Image 1: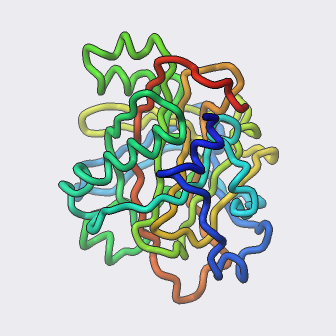
Image 2 (image 1 turned 120 degrees about the vertical axis):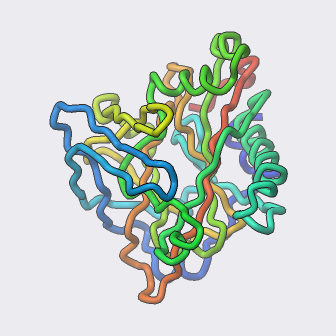
Length: 302
C-alpha cells in the first residue's frame, strides 16, 4: 500500500467535503501575512518557562511577509507525506474530554498511533507528547494552555530529530537509529469549525536547505532545536479552511531518509482575513509521534 492510498483508508478515510464557510468565504487562494525569521547571522533562541511561571521570551529578528495561501481542500486527495510533507485525513475520535490526561493517554494516543501507522506504513509508532492550544485569552487563562505559534517553523532539525530518539528510547535507540524513522505530528481541532488561527503548511518540495535556520528552544530541564525559516517567495503555502473535529492534518517534521522525499515541513498559524467578526477562538491538540520502519516497503511515491 502506498503512502497516498494508506491515508485514505480506515482509520484515515478520505478528506471531508468542504464545509459551507470554506466554499463561500475562502477563494482558491488568498493573501495573508506569515512571520519569517530575518537572518542576522546569530542563532535565535526561545526561552520556555514552566507553565504558569512567566512568558515565553525570544531573541532574533522577525518580520511578516504577505504570501498567497491556497485552499488545500481542492488538492487534498493528491497530497502525500513523502512528496508534500503533509496530508489531510478524515478521522473520528472516541475522546470525550481532551482536557482529561488519562483519556488522552488511554484513548487518544492509541488512536493516533494507529492513524500514523496507516498513513506511513511504519511497523511501530509511539506517541511521545502532545500540546493543547487555544487562541482565546479566557480559555487559556482558565486551563493554562499554549497559544498558536504564529511563526514559520519546523519542529525538528537534522540534529534534533535523531536526538529525540536517543532521549526517549533508552537502550533501544542505537538499534532504532540504524533504520529509517520519521517524526510525524497530528494536528486536530478539538472544537470546530476552526475560525481563527488556522494552520498554513508549506509544500516540502518548495523548501530549500538555505531557507532553514536552527533555533534553540531552552526549557528549564533541557535544550531542544527547531528550524525557523527565512522568507523565500518560492514557498508554496496551503491551508484547510474551517477544519472540524473529525479532521486531522498529519505533518512530517523529520525523516531520516535523504533520498529526495520530504524531510521537513514548514508550518505556522496565521490570521485568516476571512474570519467572521464573531469568530470562535481556535482550540486544537497536536500529538508528536516517532514512526519506525523495519524495511522500506513499497517504492516511495515521491
